[in-house]
Image (tube, rainbow, N blue to C red; front, side, top):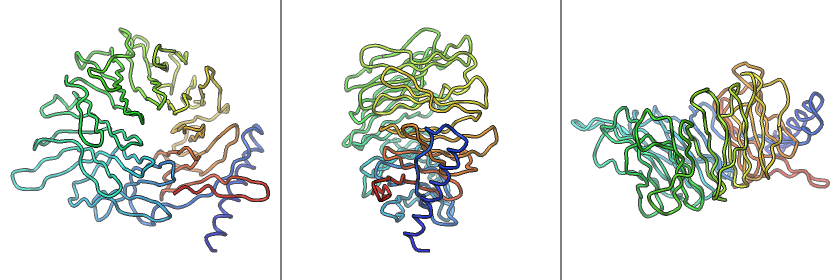
Length: 404
């Protein structure tokens, strides 16, 4: 079977899956079809992966016992890194932006006599070469992690220093293309930073002590010290996300009745509570914010019936309404949504959704993760890594959305 016939067959099968799903679900869920491509070669060992809005996929493979990063573009894979030692493993927080730049953190091992040790460093691949962004000053057991990459090639991360107790005290750093700026200088328990395309950085932390529950949300817009935009005594604020509109969404929990999470959003002037989740909340601690101000989260009054909700334009819409639980969900900038769903077993089914229509992309997928871009393309791991692209229907013709 040639590649054109394989493509048509894949699209047909997914269309039939959508039709079968429509037979047992509300009609509003029918209509999407996808074509699936295998990204990774057979027999490769796989790790994390990421996709940009051009359909390029960064992924981790293992070559002769050493973790390496690969880039899939134009139908081909290119090895980006050339790690040498078998203890150069543990690639985390892999990301790719729309320029094809890649950021990640990695455990680096020094096998030289008298210098054995390990650091966790943040790296950036600029399209030609890659380099570490943090400076460990010759010290071992320093840890830089949780990098976040924007479309300008800037990266924010947190770093712990030797001999920080249990590596639990961090500072936030920002790489701006020509230099590295330290945004905090207090060795406090900072949370993972998030960065928008304007170079604004948000994170949560506490500048007093590790055991304090009263986390604050900070926002750096170019001036230091970064101001606090969210704080309420006894109610910790954490896990902030930021979009290109400058909106920041975060979780606030009440430590007296755990778990009691609600989602708040800051619009540049004031904070708005957008959820009213009670102590029966099973998944409200996970949410997604996109660049149009929409927020997606899951919630249910039982552990096996979490449904998805979408907030936007001041209102909330229930996206799913069935007896399944929904998890590993994602929200793209133009409203594309993906999720996994099951009835309580380990593996689940993977769906893509937009404007009331959905398509089942795969069945029996584990918890390896999945990602979606603003073209509606979905990447997931089920043995190999797959890339599925929506088939756009036009009068008299079907065209596959291919972005390179």
